Length: 85
Image 1: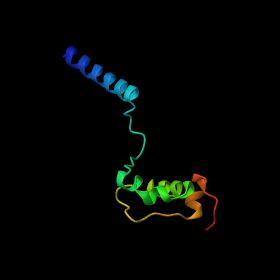
Image 2: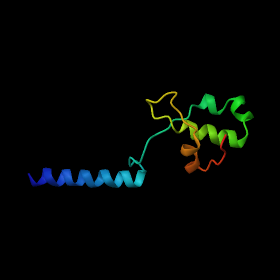
Image 3: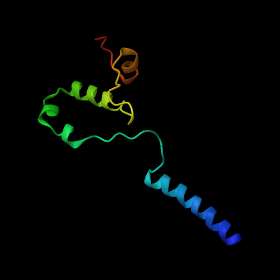
Image 4: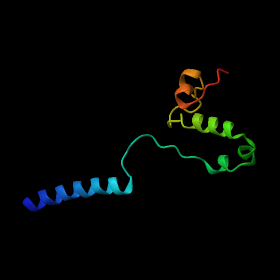
């Protein structure tokens, strides 16, 4: 039994070490950027400000809120946006 207990303990330690070393710790949501969107001529034609705004809006997507994005000043101000419209 001691061997099984030690193996479990080592496994949990190795798991934590792997998370720490490999950066695999869960620390928030994940956002996958679609290459076709971000390599299109239309995207490259945008100003840097417009690209930043698109990125900030895109980061609001949580997997279930498709189309429910908000660019109200109250939401955007903490991200550094100061325009009132």
